[in-house]
Length: 140
View 1 (cartoon, rainbow, N blue to C red):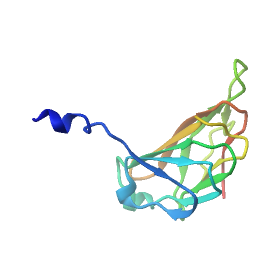
View 2: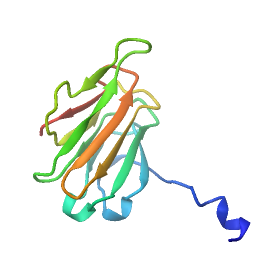
View 3: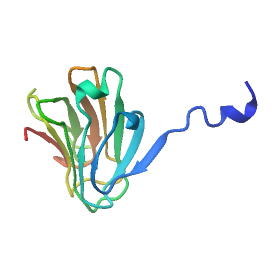
View 4: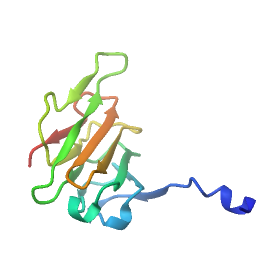
């Protein structure tokens, strides 16, 4: 392998999200930045995504809310850890419940994040915020 190809082997796909967008199967592995404009994002169905599909959302600007929705009867399982600096952290949602909408509220700060991945049956989420309840999960 030539040295020329090595520098880009671990390069990530990065896309700024603003407005309304339905993600596609081809968006697998993309790191999306959110927060610069209000966003309404719809995930592909889990049947389309299939096992191994994943993406990440990172806050690059703390001015606008962004909602990420699982389509139809698809579910997002998991939790996001949040809390103020050096304070007791909390989990959102507080109990294990299937959800359909992951929301970055206007309280998020730069660097907050969430990772979604699919096992072919459900989506799973993990993430973190420096502000309590800045990233929420809820039923639609």
